[in-house]
Image 1 (tube, rainbow, N blue to C red):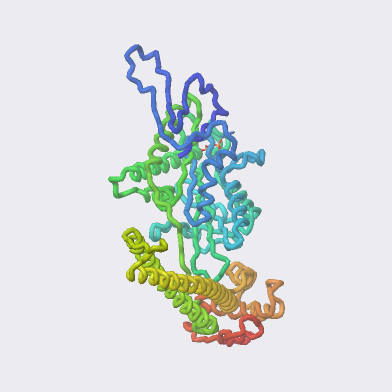
Image 2: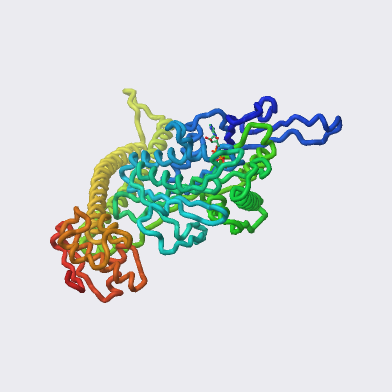
Length: 574
Ligand SMILES: Nc1ncnc2c1ncn2[C@@H]1O[C@H](COP(=O)(O)OP(=O)(O)OP(=O)(O)O)[C@@H](O)[C@H]1O
């Protein structure tokens, strides 16, 4: 939890009030007693709040480094992250989250997070990272999609609902947009920003009248297609609407109505935080408001959550500041349980098993054989090492016995030569034999280790080849080029009935002949599946979909690298 102190607008200098003394990670809050109340005055004047850091008189960059950089980095590793600004109206939440438009330097957490995400993607060339963006607004207790205007066609189900599936929250009906680069992500952000509801009152000329959640959805896969593991995460950047004292803001009409909704939902948020912070409570009232429901997995889930509490350093707002700090302290008591959202693509695993039985059978056989040889050699190494250890022990024991014998020895002949007895002589011979055997075994171990290294190298090579052949096979057999996928989406440029003309003049200009054939193949699956009411993943459709429709395509058998070998049995001629 971080405290963001904004006193640029302060009408009363904070020093007069002696508002905050920053001591390590504690905020000491002191208010002068009201002397007009007389000498006996029990009015509380000192408060202490524990926080993780105070951000006072710092640049937007420093704010970002302190509160967001690490959360964003973790999100790319598969951890959900939430950064949320909370505080009274006009205290600087939108400034922290989005920033001021006047200068580039004043950009806030969201644009900086977008930049960091795409910069980090460049640094991870071995990963295929897909970024999608959604922008949700909760206005007067109803959900709205700030990016609805970006969709080529309006969603069929315009009524948005919050879905809670296995403790994972998402909003059905909220559009999610692919952003291939920073510019695309920014245009989504600006589009959403212009659609936000803003009104004016005495404390803020541009007061946000809604809670907004800008979500960056991240999906990261290894570039090796055969790797079934992939991670997903969502990074929620939340700009809450500010609480306001109606007397202070002098709101009327619609602005007053909005303020009532805002205050009510923030009260529910506070209740949920209170329940979460109390370990004895087993029920948390998340469903009381749209805001708490939608933030359920960010507040108490597997998320790295950072709260930025925005306050004024101004005596006029003491009550609101105290209330914000109380909220933040409660929030600090909540423990989340960050965990990587790891998934395994069962389709890839199934496909790999198929490949090993099918065109990958030969390379798989060699791989398994090499692995068996390697295992055997490793077993031999272990046995040899055990034998060598026994020799070593025997050598040590024999040496000890010889030392004893040497000390006991009494015989020296007239020439001064030492005379040894039969037992000592046998011990010397034994030691010599043991040393020779030890050396032979040691040499054997050395060459066996070299063999093991070589076998390991062969096994590694085979594994790489097996996986890369699987990659090509999988790619050629199951994956449909992205431009074709885009083209067949309901809102895309292709519609039923355009199939024949497409063969001559494909809608996607760079669609090759084989792409066209594959498109037709894919399109028919989509068509059939849609009519049957089952839409599976693309690989699944290709593999199992046609069985449902009674249409059996001939799958490419061996020459996957040669596109012209594709032979498809289509139900209709195109
Ligand atoms: N740290 C800051 N430095 C400079 N200007 C700031 C700072 N914080 C806020 N401001 C300015 O103060 C005004 C109000 O800030 P902002 O709109 O971010 O408040 P808010 O908390 O989001 O209010 P609301 O809840 O009403 O939407 C804006 O003009 C903003 O640019």
